[in-house]
Image 1 (cartoon, rainbow, N blue to C red):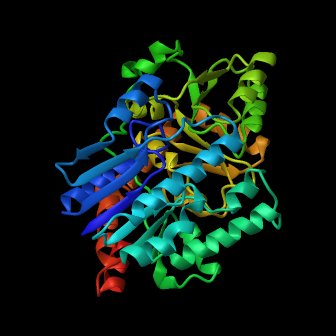
Image 2 (cartoon, rainbow, N blue to C red):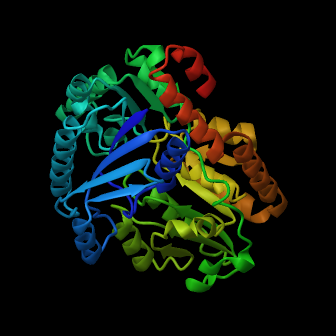
Amino acid sequence: MRILLLANYYKPEKAASPYLGENKREAFAKAGFDMVLYTPVPTRGVSEEARREYRQRLYEEELDGKLKVHRFPLMREGKNPLQRAFRYALSIWKLYRLALKEHDIDILSISSTPPINGLMFKRIKKKLGCKVVYNLQDMFPDSLVTAGMTKKGSLIWKLGRKIEDITYRDSDLIVALSEDFRRIVLSRGVPEEKVTVIRNWVDEQAVVDIPRADNTLFDTYGLDREKFYVCYSGNVGLSQNMDMLLDVAKSLIDRPDIGFVIVGDGAYKKQVEARVASEDLTNVTLLPFQPYEKIAEVFSLGDCGLIISKAGTGVSSVPSKTWSIMAAARPVLASFDKGGELDAIIAESGCGVCVPANDPAAFRTAVLNMADDRAARLAMGENGRRYIEENLTRAIGTAKWVDVMKAVTATEREEVLTHAE
């Protein structure tokens, strides 16, 4: 089997959950699949010196030759949204043109970021005679609405829905990251046999409980090992309810034994920094994005790990960082939409507490309960680790992906997909 991968970002770039793609490619290579990957010269989190180096070596082979990586020159990514959108469009156009030159491809495997990826499926399928497997990691344009970037019924929303319909129509198989995503896709008229679910996983060998005495981040950033910490790690963006988090932190300023740590970066980071400084929130510590090599220390940093979003933004998602919190044997504290998949998993596994989004009183109470009941939070952490080991390990997740790739070209497709789920 020969798989074509089109990626707008690729290592050494810094991106969310880079291990997922790496784990999949390694599993594909072990299964005997050949892969061809096209991607721009790296830009995110990469120095100009590194970019010059990659411009000199536009072709590499990895995984004992099973993965062939082709890079092409492209402008550096800027912070201006319009500039980034233009770069995205240009990158997709170049990926599309390169894909059309390929041959002997069995499967085009591509993700939902950016969502306009789906516009190139039909021509590539016709030219190459291949199948398309679409990795659905984000519900577009719903995500723009929940982030406050547009409104339902707007021109952007209508355009997004049209792109979504085209993408689903031209995909041979849609791999959704949650049952909630699957239900939404099916509600939009997609045949049931075209949609399967593979949850994102965590590398349980890489993300483990690091005892506080051995966690170097406490020394690096001068954190008090005697305090109880609520730790958030990830995107500091528009959909995360950072203002409510800071409001609750401010209300607990008289509890010197409780601290809040925010690790990461994003579009709302400057506003968070401004509030912390102007309101003298001495119980809030802001840390920069950490390299993947530090992932176990990051998720072992807090006494509980935080999942937080504004109301309406989390009803159809399960943030991947949830699994890392659980793998580090830390309880999950979620301020999230109730009634969704994350709420159900937390209740089923006993790995933490989920309170309604946009409810500062409930969130504050949950923080205090965890801070004051060490035995309960340790039990939640153990429950979370056990759930990961039984359901969401690297081996389990990648095996499902290997099955799916075999199934999409197999006669016994339904049987194999049922096994994958």
